[in-house]
Length: 167
Image 1 (cartoon, rainbow, N blue to C red):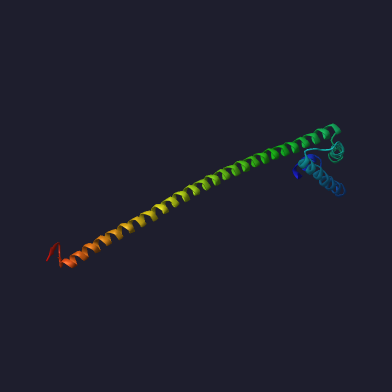
Image 2 (cartoon, rainbow, N blue to C red; image 1 turned 30 degrees about the vertical axis):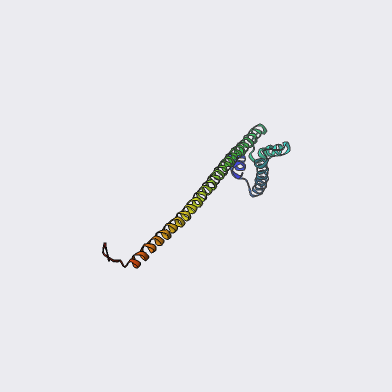
C-alpha cells in the first residue's frame, strides 16, 4: 500500500519545506488508509477518489486531469493486486480442498486395508488354533497307541535293543 501511495505522490520538483512535509505525511497516511480499504473491499467511494485527485493536484502541482489519470491508474493497480491475491487465495483453497480429499481417501483406504488385515489375522489365528488343537489330538492318539504297544511289549517281555526286538 505504501508503494502505491508513494507512486501516487511522485514529483519531479525539489523536496517541499518542513511544513509541507507534514502535510504530505498526513496525506500519505490518509491515502494509505483509502488504499487499504480499497485493497480489502475492492471498492472506493467517489468522495475518496475526488479527495485523492485534489490532494495529488496540490502535492505534485500537476493538472487535475493528470492527477485524475494518476489516481485512476493507482486504483486500477490496487484492484489488480487485489484480484491477483483473490485468485491466489482461491487457488490455495482449491489445493487445500484437494489435499483434504486425498487425505480422506487415503484414510479410507488405510481403514479398509486395516480391516482386511485384521480379518486375515483373525482367520489365520483361528486356523492356527485349530491346527494346534488337531496336532495335539494327533499327538495324544500317537501317545495312546505308543503306550498300548509299550504295555503289550512289557507284558510279553520284549526288550528293545536298537532296531530289533528280543525275547
